[in-house]
Structure formats: structure tokens, C-alpha cells
Image (cartoon, rainbow over all chains, first blue to last red; front, side, top):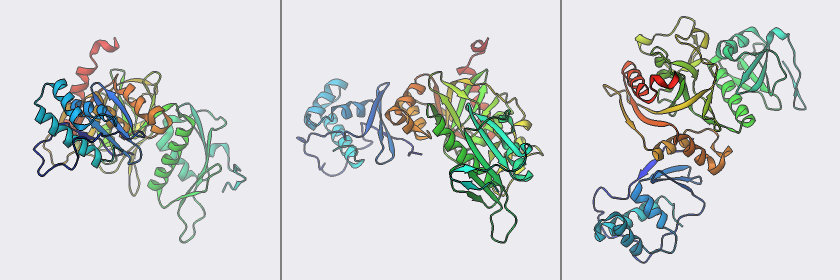
Length: 109
Length: 297
């Protein structure tokens, strides 16, 4: 049996302490072998290698979809701010935090 | 003992010691080489008994002549090495596990879930969760609250129709339920488990497939004073369903696509169970809203 799902939110509960390790010019890319499906505005990601299932909320789903290896964090944040009508600084923080989460979960190349 | 020669099983004994079952449309024949083993299997699978037929899955089971250090039960499936069990509970567990794997191979079209299934107003609902989450105890409790019994521990879903197929074997509990739900005298008690045959359940046993309408994902919280419930989004329900699927790789998208399809048609809830009576009442109340009376008129 695979692990129970963990929900990945696009917004952190509090500001992360310390500087992010990810440069704004980084172009995050989804791992091609993970299976992901959009389900009613959220995304379910199946990582068979790790035996884990992840559930991304609406914001995280947007960011995940943009992790195409061609869009920089800056661009993703800008587009997120426009799409969801949020402050650019908040969007930038959210994208960085989420991408770092995805990286820590080894869902990115 | 039926010797395994070149993958074949040489049958011994009389037809009276042969048990024929039909499970998910597959035929299982069991040659029982002693009356005790046969009685165990009849108690657990009596409702699945069918007329004799060539089996899709064949077993020889029994108890070898007593020798010091020899396990008291054996189970042999055609072409497989014998499995040994120290006592009745372990024997039943091994048989159930092996038969479940064999059935999954024979019916890869079905979506197998680690779940209990009951029927309410002619509609099926699942209790889903890992071992220890209280599925079987809650199943037993709900049989005292107007539900019919479809299966315990294993749900087989036909993805074309969304029907859950019946598998009314004995309900298996790991511990005694609360006094208000005391077990019948004829309960089979082994060293590790309690088995309530379908024939002595306090409710009707459903032998027909029923369409799935709801799924309750259980988490047991013994320290809580009362149960709580919350609806799940389709994505959350899909992820939880997939996590409890037994044969996801037999389906496209490693089972994810089938899970999405199922949860698009089924309402799902997460229930933190506590007191059994209150938990059952909460489930029934929720089902009464999900499956109105007119649904089966």
C-alpha cells in the first residue's frame, strides 16, 4: 500500500527564515516519470519511485503546471500574481517555497 | 497429503471433503484433508459455497500427522510451495491472502480495495482505511443499524458499472467490540482473531452487486469523545482511494485514472471515529442525506 497523501499548499503558514537557495532565474522542471492528473482544480501526483501520493491545492497546481523547464521562478511568480490577483512579493515567496518543497520531495528534475 | 508433482495436485479424499466456492465469478476448489480445516473454511466462506465445478484456483489444505515441531496447518495451491500455519487464525489469514492474490490475477479488470462494504437503501458504500483503522469493527457495528453486509477487508469494484461485487465471508475482528455490540456465541475465536460467519450476522447478507455511492475514509481516534466527519474534495478522495488500492498497477495510469473516475461519481468523507455507537449514527445520518429514500423507489 502506498503512503497516505500529503497535501502540498501553495502558501506557507509563515515566512521562511533565511534566504532561499533557489535563484530566481532557475527553471524548475517536473520529473517526467511522475504521474499527475488535474482533478477538479487540484492535482494528484503519483510518485511510484518513492511510493508516495501527493495532493496539490489550486495554487500549488498552477505552479506545478508551470514547472515546465522553460519558465523561470520570476516568470511563474509574475503570472501567479496576475492569475490569482495577489501581491507580487507574496507570489514570489509562494513560488519559491513551493518549488523548494517540490525539490525536497524530489518531484523535480 | 496431496503431493505436488509437476505443478499438479493429486486429489485425495472424498467429494464430501471438497469445498467449492465462487468468488467474483471465479471458481475456487479446496480439497480439505481433515474435518477441522474444512469446518474452519466453511465457517468463513460458507456464503460463497457453490456447486462443484472445475476450479480456476485449486487448493489442498489440512493438518499433517502430529509431529513435534511440525506446524499444525498447511495450505498448498497448485504449482506453489506449501504454506504452513501455526494456528487456525494464521491459517485463515494465509488462505485469505493467497486467494486474494490469485483472484486479483484472474480478475485484473476489477479494482480491488482494502475496504469493507455495506449496503444502505440498495446502494453500496465503502469503509476505507489501513489495518487498525476500525473498518471491520465499524462494519460489524453498522450491521446493527440497518445496513446489509456485502464484504469485509476486500472490495472488488467493476469499473464499467461502478458496482461493488459481493464477497460475504466472515467478518474478521482483532479484538472484542464494545459490549453493546457483543459477538454471537457461534463466533469462531482463534489465537489472534475473531471470525463472525455471515450466517449468524444480525443483518441480511447481500449476494448481489450494488452500485457504489459513498466512501468513508476511516481514522480511529480512541482518545476522542465523539466522532467527527468532513467531506473530501475529489482530489483528496482520489489520493486516499489510490493509497488503499490493492492492484493499482493492473489499471491505466498506475490506477490513478480509475480512482479519478470512481471518485467523480462517489461522495467521499473523512471520518475520525471514536465511540462506535456515535460513529455508526454519524455514518447513517450522512448516508441518509446522500442516498434519499426516493433513490430506490
